[in-house]
Length: 343
Ligand code: NAD
Ligand code: DAU
Image (cartoon, rainbow, N blue to C red; front, side, top):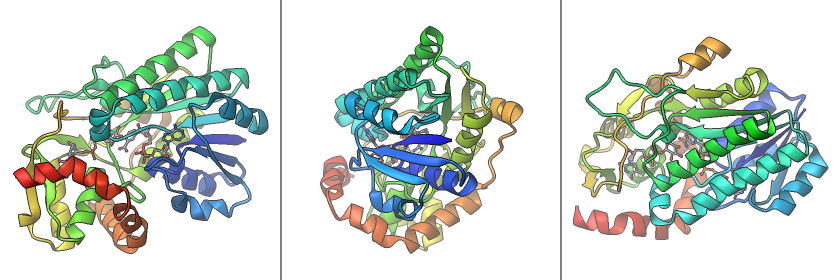
C-alpha cells in the first residue's frame, strides 16, 4: 500500500512517518512537504535512507504538482498533516492559514477523488470546538459538539473539516477526520509552549507565560496521537470523526513549573506577559468513541512523556539550536520583545 503523508517534515507528521516505517515496513510512504519555516528535512534524515520512503518538496496548494504526484504514485491512502499550525502566527497573518489549511485541503481532496484513493484522512484539532469554561470541569468536547472557533487558525481548520464532510456527502469521497488535543514530544518546533519553555529555561531566558497562566490544555504524547491515526486509517469507519485525547488537563503555569523543576532552573524565570488575543480558556477531549470503536487508549503518562521530551531536547540541542538562531530570532522579537519589555 502507498500512503501519501503531507506535512511529514513537521512535528506530528514526522513522528507519524517514523511510526509507519517501523510498524508497517510493507507499506510505501511518500511525504509531500513544502518545507516552510516549520518543516525540516533534517527531521526525516533516518527515513530518507529507507527504500520504501520518498520525500517530495512541494506545496499542497499547487494543483498541477499535486495531481502529477498522484498520477505518479497512485496513493491508496492520503493523510493530510500539512498546515500552518501556530495560533499566534494566525493572529498576525491569517491569509496563509486560509490558503494552506482550506484551499490546500481542497486540492488534495480533488486529487483524491480523481485518483480514487481508498481513504482521505484529515488531521484536524480539538480547537475547532472553541473552548470550555474553567468552572465546568464536567464538560468535554465530543464529536457532536458544535464547531465554534476563536482564532484564524482554528477557523481555517474548521473550514477544512466542513469541506471534508461535504466531499464525503456530495462526492462519496471515503474520508475520516481526527480531532486531537495538544501534542508534545520530539521534533516540536520551539515556537510552541513546551519546547519554547525548555529552550528558554536551558538558556536561562525569561519564560513568557500569557495572562495568568491559568488556561488549560489537554496534553497527549505525540506517539499516542500517531498510533490513533494509524488505527483510524486502517480500521476507522468512512465518514466518521474521531476525537483523540488522554484526559490529561493541565494549567499552563503548572507545565512551566514542571519544566523548571526537571531542568533545575529557578521559577523566577517565569514572566507573565500580555495575553494572547481571543485566548481559549480550556480544551478537554472526550475520547470515548475511539476507545469504544477502535480500542485506542493512550500509552504514555504525562509524568513519563515530559521527562522523555526534555531528555530529547537535551540530547538534540543541534536540532533546535539551529532553528532558534536563524529567522526564528526575528519572529521571537516580534512576538515577545515588547511584551517582555513591558512585563
Ligand atoms: P507543524 O507546523 O510542526 O508542521 C506542519 C508541516 O506542514 C511542516 O512540515 C510544513 O513545512 C508543512 N506545510 C505547511 N504548509 C504546507 C503546504 N502548503 N504544502 C505542503 N506542506 C506544508 O505542525 P504540527 O504541529 O506537526 O501539526 C500537524 C497537523 O496536526 C496540523 O494539521 C495541525 O493542525 C494538527 N494538529 C496539531 C496539534 C498539535 O498539538 N501540534 C494537535 C492537533 C492537531
Ligand atoms: O489543541 C490542539 C492545538 O494545540 C493544535 O491544533 C495547534 O496546532 C497547536 O499549536 C496547539 O495550540 P495551542 O495554542 O494550544 O498551543 P501553544 O503551544 O501555542 O500554546 C499552549 C498554551 O500555552 C496556550 O494556552 C498559550 C500558552 N502559551 C503559549 C506560548 C507559545 C504561553 O503562555 N506562552 C507562550 O509563549
